[in-house]
Image (cartoon, rainbow, N blue to C red; front, side, top):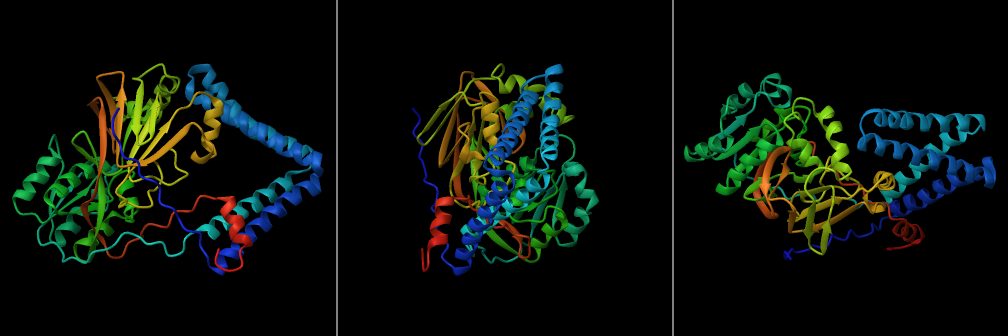
Length: 446
């Protein structure tokens, strides 16, 4: 048994302002109005039938989505027809019963109730990461990948702009080792390392910067730029990231470690890692994913995994995601945002899907799905019934010997960011109806 340390999730206090209390009351009022509308117009029997038809239709569509992902050939395309046909059939049935307007109005009222409830539970003025005032670098060294992000380096004229600001720029061409470039820059006296490229390249150079205690600069010139997103940088215009050279502040963020390597976002195992590992993935991501998913999701391919994280000891998950700080509560794929990068913890998410019911539950969010388990820990270990397994480290495919151990280095990386940047919005709170009821009924401080 591997000894791992579990870390409890932080408890968010219930907001106490009068505006929050009135928003909570408004949420219940609008939700009640939506329910009364359906019952009044359709009647008790009709409203039950209305909900039943909608529920059955959604279940059929979700089952079709699972069959589409887990089968090939004729069955896959029949499932696609089922996914498309289910909502169309529901719409026809509602139209014949002359209830379309009821459904449309309900579709407006119910999301409004949920939005008011989330706003009521939001913590106003949530503190972001602390900013440190530091002098501008005198010998910044930036590594740029001209192919990354479909050629963003050239499209935004990043090389010329960086040199105008006094930075030395090295272009990644051929079989150059980005780690060796960064190490040589440190030996030559660089006092800041930066990267214009994908998250995988960012992670490699960030590891060198952290090793030498140098500030690191992220330029959002990759395809997805997840690290830049969670740092609050502008992903649409990577040139704005260069403003940090002249007018910037420092943040201290965590780094993940996996088998001697650094990761800034996440390390993935199982289905996603196997897809990324495929030689065909870079040329045709969608086709490769659809071709490989059936065997991966039904357990016919790939090693059997076991994840150990705190009190979690799970055997047989099809996908495991270990992230540098946890993703938002509704994100089951590691494609969203992390509210913070300085919590000193790893987020662990494991998915085990046995069929259409589990797949349907995933849509409701991880809180409602038994197919998803999560933990917040400082260390996690992934074992397998194979000597080595594919791992996706910040989207880069590698093969690692088992067991694979992941840890977190709290505050290990100094990141220099522009003083003026979009920032990271406060994460929407999970809608807890019990908390919301207490807030709505409170008079003074709840």
